[in-house]
Image 1 (cartoon, protein in one colour):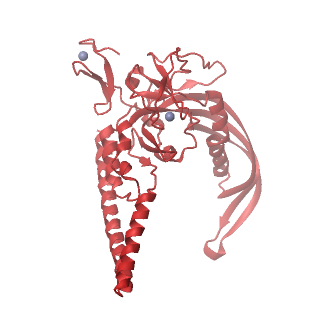
Image 2 (cartoon, rainbow, N blue to C red):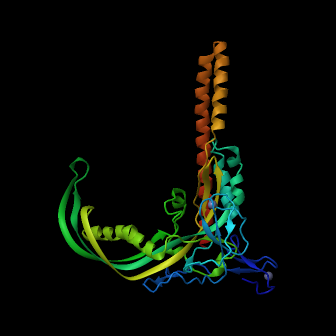
Length: 383
Ligand SMILES: [Zn+2]
Ligand SMILES: [Zn+2]
């Protein structure tokens, strides 16, 4: 997108939550989330064609030969390193097929600096990571990436038959009475969500970090994407719908049946659900991501781009452990020669106890510091 005052290139700026001209610095804010939670919904029916690809702006596809990640990028915005694994990525020259255009997006609101600060805050507790990790080298390639998600809304009518349990009494007198019941329940379901990335959907690190509600969404505009990378979805809409029916939708209608029977639990439940008025969204969820290979394994730093969650996997430094054990052993041998081995061991255990207490105290104070910052930030966001 071009700047209206000088014709320069406008790029999304996380700190300003809007587009900023790289030439004259003009700022154009993005729309705020609407009060209604309907942003970007569209009817899900067989007419949904996945070969249309109108993202509103040209995107190039880069693929990583090493881990298979596929990202749409904006012209030449990426460092050339894969944010998933740190390998060099290759620009695919042929015109990229983008698939369906996104319908909703959660724009980035957490900055690179905030993610970095948080990484260092917790890093002091990771004694056993290799020094290159402790010094944050991995952060050099921290990249904002939008990860694809599908959400579904639907009206459901479910017929069920099974055993429902009612608890009576408490403690030792607790008893469950079971009854066979059959019935029908109607329920409107909103925001059942499925990860659109095969690479990520079973990733513990990412799943611990990503959470969003439909209230966070704004309707998609290409503006929020300028200067940012988006992962290509690898779970198509039809597959996502099948996954949703077997997972979240299933558990929500089952729960609706349990609630209708006023039961505390159920077993051997058979259900059959009719779905109608199905709406879907294709949502882009913001994630800060970096990865690097260490000893043949990929380690990642993953942080949400809109809530305060973050996580990372770290290698364990065997060299550090060996050094520590060798020093301990040498000191033990030396003190034993002077007949003080027992004293040394006693002191050693005490020192470790003291170190542990100091560690816990530091940990608790860091935790409260972070809670405070998160509170301040979330108050700031609701202004
Ligand atoms: Zn300008
Ligand atoms: Zn890669």
